[in-house]
Image (cartoon, rainbow, N blue to C red):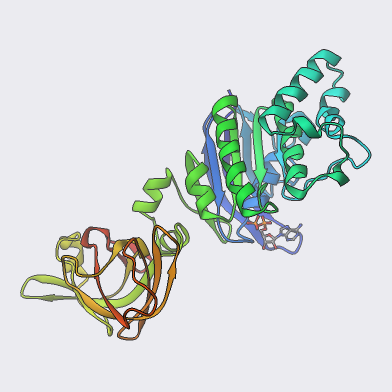
Length: 360
Ligand code: ADP
């Protein structure tokens, strides 16, 4: 069993800046949990405190119900993989991967078996006799992963391990790490600023901003029911469109009115919305929840600023009476074909935020 628990954990650096602010988190045994948030939000600091590389300013960290605040890193049985890995330049790939096991004096046969196994998982079989300088960046990163895997630790901590890889290798390694998790069934905590990585890899996602946890949940829960505007905007790419307006009730129909357009939203949590009459709210709609062309519902005519065909779908950068909208659609329109396009909002995918919190 390897459970990680953070209780009211705060980290202040010497400049008195609060990098992590009163965090509570329970990572379950064998779980793959992803910490995601913009650069500087405190993700690495959280991992480093769990690894024992940073002291906790306040609060408690438990690994398997054991308080580890003062346990040195080497006794925590944790493996950490960084973006800036440091391989031993004078050692071969084999020796680099075997190093941790060699100092623990494991039998030679066992070391060879584990290096072979690990090299196979990471497709490093043909590179075992090379030195790091004869490897590409991606290959070096895989060796760094190998060094972590081979130790069979209780918990893996990954700090943006794929950021240095090219796009293709990144996607491949993402799948490899997910498969690795299924195979090893070890608790893994993974830090990234990339929402796609978070969505695709995590059993659960922890969204962090300014050192504070915004939401912890399964990927689709977070996507469908974001806890606030920050989460709504951060998860998914391109981000959610936000438009400010007011709630207005006319002839018992609840409407969202902005200076750009008016929309009937009567169905969406009507009783709460009625209480918000005349209040300023924000309507949120994801690019993929705006329909293009003559589809059902209230439609609006929007000017086309730019179309980016991605193949199966296209990104439309539109202007709707002064507000910019990004739309993702499978409808294919050639760039020069039209100047404007009809759009409509999927009613059941509309989010309304009042003072940053979702009403529906
Ligand atoms: P992330 O991993 O989300 O990019 P970090 O955990 O690295 O964020 O940093 C969180 C905040 O703490 C940032 O504002 C960063 O500048 C600050 N910080 C990180 N390390 C130190 C340090 N050693 N001394 C002072 N401030 C630090």
